[in-house]
Image (spheres, rainbow, N blue to C red):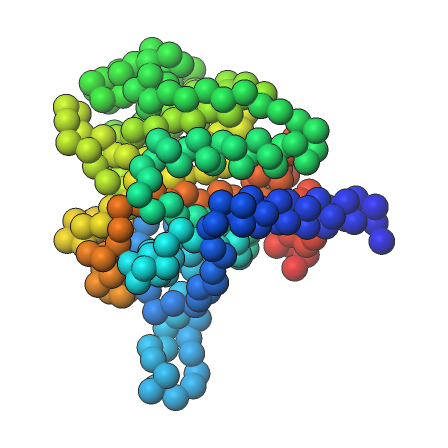
Length: 318
């Protein structure tokens, strides 16, 4: 066997063992949830694979969507009273293939009952520290708000600056502005001006995002209102996205429908809403959850920009 492939397999096995030990020590239960669902992901920037069931119609809906994360069924389990839990498994995203992306990849997702996003982001950083120790690496931790990040690295207040100021802050980065929204400009500043300058020896945790980028996070009232969300980066690589979880079914349905309107405007497929999740949300306990890209973590551990380097077989060779 190719020595590099053997090393890749051994390192992934060691990381999986560490992850399961990490949660066993904290009494967080491992669970498994379906890969195929009657509902898809409405997020406009994520495309889901789907397939059609050929069996008897009594078995349920024919159109099934491959999960882009285990989030929805995990929340249904939380609402049913399972308590702290996690899942380590494969997820699928259509159209995402390249140096840092594979359409099939591994995600770790876990939930902590009674926690908020601030408490969870420190546990996430500890997990990454332990993973880095497998390869003899360390990283310091820097925690700052979304506003502080933009003020320090781009010289703008992301909540007060107008679109012209955001475009100007991109400097020499020139982007076709047709159809771009304010959130698009903020994302471009993050990916082109801010994130590329993160120190490779530092974990950067960014918390309290714009309410317009809440996804499935709670929004904290204030001026401005803030999404109780965090992202964790190791160097320039985004590893984790976490929320203080929304449990308001009415608000979540409104966000899903807003997503579908944006998808319709772009001519994208309209996946079915997860009605089982919406029915369960009123019973969701106060909790925080986070998803970590395991392949991204392995890439960061090895200092490689190529996801193919940490896979047994990438998409082109599957």
